[in-house]
Image: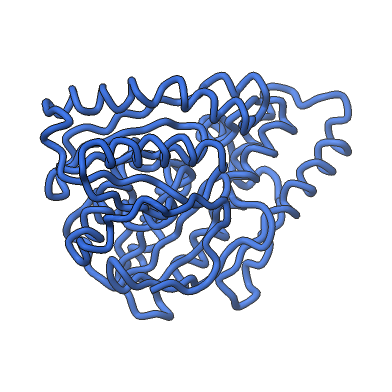
Length: 337
């Protein structure tokens, strides 16, 4: 039995796994950030402090086990908000020390990277993974649970950040992704034309800052006194289509050029209905299978952290006896093995 803890941003999560089977996956979301239009780091870390004990206790109860049944602890250590990461890491270290258990530090993006394998055990290596969220947008070539390479990443805004900023321009609130998606399902995706930056540049990199600027100028020129509510679905659908077109085109091209037949999409934006539909349909035309985690595995969650931790522990159990690892805010850029 393994207990995993995730606290990299504004979700406090704990999960219990047994040989890749998720026995519980408790997620406590900090909804108060909506009032601030974004995540406030200091408030996030305080909220983690207030909830982490209860979240871990709930995960153990839901799995119908006690602390004494645990054989290992896993925790997210990077990247993320330093204060938030410290709460989870220090709680995990204390628990591991008290119980005399190994502790496995896990990279948050790697957790997302392999969440498709958690969802579908039939996933075969190698595959291409698109990890797309509010803070990250990257393409990976994944060869095993311990070897992968970064094919490309965003040069500025992440896709999820673009959704949030456009939602703010439209007065929709935060987080913007689900709100834009809900309206987009009622709109015409070709009603307005917005830029598809770097779509045909020949790389696997992304750029979404220009889209946000384009939407701002469009709104200032076309709707200077405010966007009529009946127009919102068409704008949202058109913006979403611009983002989805780039994500899907680059992911499918990466799969074709690297000779793989599976694309895994993961991260918060992988919950987007337009992205899922387009990736599935476009992939099918090229004989490429699309795998997306269930909604609870798309958001930040401890189940994905625990799943990867079990793989790491099996490969090299003696490595995970130290408690002197650090948390880091840095993202994932270079090739890792």
